Length: 261
Image (cartoon, rainbow, N blue to C red):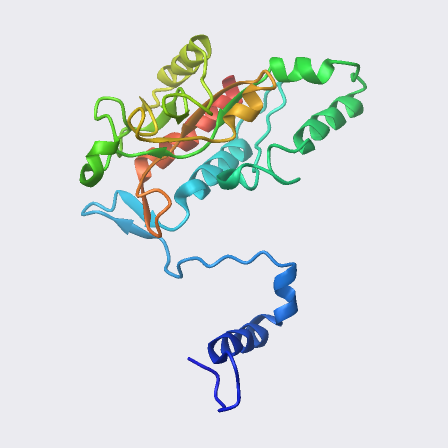
């Protein structure tokens, strides 16, 4: 609703500022430094006749962040360092000092080496080359309404388990990451031993679909990495859909990865 008064300019803007000031103490100058997001106001809900799915805003990538964080908190003790990275700005290029393109994570690992008294030249590179990682990001479920953008024999389906995307990018594999065969075979062995269902897919039909995650950034450091996450329907829409079974499969996958890989 516009702000009242005949001599007031930009009445709608003024009323929005008035509401923000009353609720949050924000004035117009705060927009110069703030990071504000407008998101759908509805809550996540169970979806389907059997309530087997969750519909909500922001499955990409809250659904993988939640399952990965819960997995590391509940993983058993091991003799290797386990880390869960929750990075910012992935959708727009991972830039800034909170994104994976920064040196923040390298500095963090260097600090661990310093505290252990083991740091020396090139040891950071050796750590990365002896590390493995699951890039926990969502995949794409086959959507029959837009079936032409997917290869039905090479895409993820709802309730078939966590999805591995061997390679990402667009126009084939350009601008993406490609996991090697030995690492994938190792992961398959771990999941099959623990009776965890998984599927292997791509992010849309070659030369039509595409996408990427932070996997290539860690791969460039020498880390063994593959994209591995919950497949979702209607990605980047206000109401994304994910299978509860797939979410649970992701949690179990991340947990055994922390414990055994």
